[in-house]
Length: 230
Image 1 (cartoon, rainbow, N blue to C red):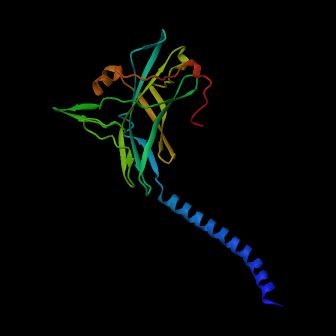
Image 2: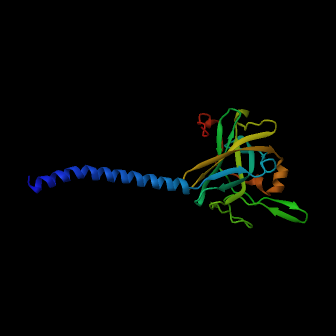
């Protein structure tokens, strides 16, 4: 037998072997990259700071929307985010979900607020606002590996129509869920219990808070909105 047919036979045998080897090598490399990504990824945890103290809801002065009287509720939470992963990450969004009497979940977006403060003797203690640069804090939302960030967040819930559209209150407490999303689209969440405070108390804590508005709020037109927490 000449060398040429043998060479052709060898090539015909080696080609599928080489193709299979390349496929296996690609799979192994992909699994290694996935392993390194999962090992090095950011691992965020969110929780309220001193939940028995700082999480509040309060009734604001009623508003008006196209001639319809509206009911306004303010929510202030003190939230901490920690990163136990090996990669720094940027927070992309932080939302609060509140349930109405009709058992419909409502998504609330944070709005700017004055830096809150309390009087301690002759001095005032100021608190950071998450994601908002102020006179005393940078408002940085980058969470380093092994690090954390924290701040106050303010949400406004406004509705009109029947009382079924008002937030569900149980024993003076409104329960909600705080959810954050990082720059890699990973979500984490925690439950929050808001205790009732008066508007006067909240105005002393954050002067001018009753005059802060936002354009979007929950109306009866949202009654068919799907549950965002499922």
